[in-house]
Length: 71
Image: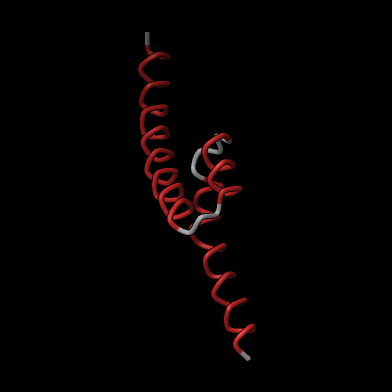
């Protein structure tokens, strides 16, 4: 019985954490028409790691590439 309640107390926050990050990342990937990222984010379950990487690093790389093209 204790194991079940302990497991739930860890599992529920992890699921909520993943849903928040995955939702944000999927929304941004869809708006920017990055279909490969959208599919990867949708299919892979990484407990929020892949969505965080996408949200923090991929958009910044895109901005740097656009600045290089303008020069």
